[in-house]
Image 1 (cartoon, one colour):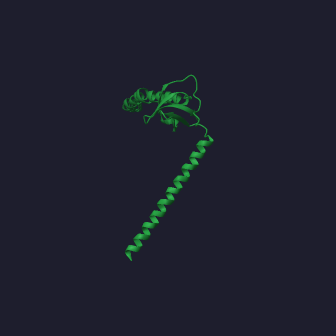
Image 2 (image 1 turned 180 degrees about the vertical axis):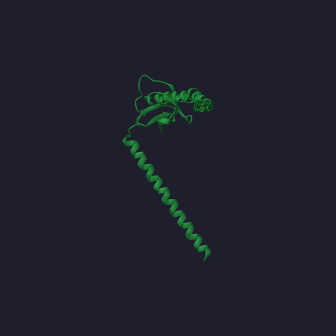
Image 3 (image 1 turned 60 degrees about the horizontal axis):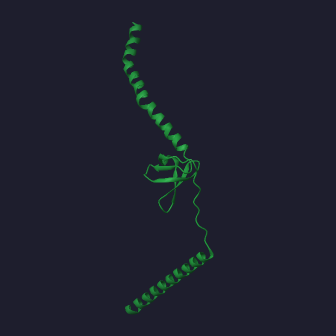
Length: 144
């Protein structure tokens, strides 16, 4: 009697066990392999590689940090920082790393022009403040 109840329990749970094994081999295991390949791809990114982010931004890797990367894209070489998990794919591997793009040094004439521009802006702001004060004064005179 005990032997027949044990076998009936086994027969009852055998389909559930087989379904779990099938899920393991057809769904869980392949997903873990894909995740592992993706993680390896993200960790192997080097400066000079061309990547695509999950948001669709395409650019070249400028520098790699522990959990982030800096890329530049577009004709004006705009720098952007992304987390490594945001990398969707590496479209082109580069054998030689890219040197960091440096901003051109300011010359004395460029600095003088910048100071001159700031002075002009201050004068314009002062003029607009003065005009606003005059307008407010005229408005007070017309109300009286």
